[in-house]
Image (cartoon, rainbow, N blue to C red; front, side, top):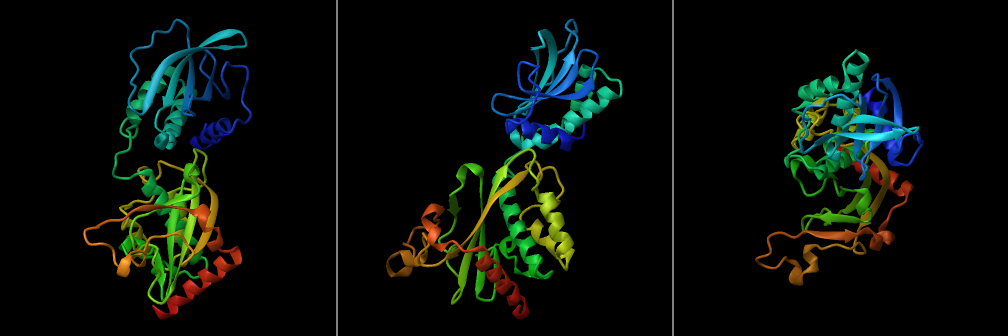
Length: 337
């Protein structure tokens, strides 16, 4: 079973979709037989991805190669009144769901090719060992989500002009993520659990360009195994639309992403659940230098970070037509860059 199909099935289980009720727990029959039963996809108590490999009741199973990212054990469930013994594999880290799906697909392929469940499990894990490692701190899910947010905004602008990559200033560590003339756009992303809350990391981040205006684009990206949004996919869209592929690659690398197809940057998938744009003006809740006496940050205050509840900024939310017009104005600034 291809990894993509497995992920779709696991995602369906997470949504409470159709599943076989013949087994004690919700599961999906893959149709792949081991001689002791059919391989099944299931979920852990917290929604973790699981692969159940039927083995003989009398089969001796040596010590299983579990890790911080992967739990492997033996479980017995009743199927139509008959106890079935399973080699039970569970992915413990959601960020590795994509890798686990690949591992599961390879195990099933090896079983179809004649390997026993235990042998298929052991050899596949040995081959994938280097990938089944908890991701380090070098690339966090927040960084992945943040890059995707800016790429989504860039894709929108490139649909209007293939040279719009020149407006992308975030990778260059400028104040705003997109800037042209007197117009700027700052991009923020939120998760499903933080729908109405964004974090501002500098006192000038919500300060418009001198004499100009600023909009805030907020993308709600929910992490899901079956999501259709990833760094690789959106980067591919952007590279196809851009007038200069190498310049875009250079900008993407500015965020430390030197390979947009790498597993490191694509270990999470997302679904775009919502998108809102706001005009950042005097009505918008923010902290800027003018918020302090004499318009300057107090001496000794070196960093300011704060959260904004977007529920208090509804009066600043822009209509779709206004957003389209604003993006067109921003792209028109390319004539003067």
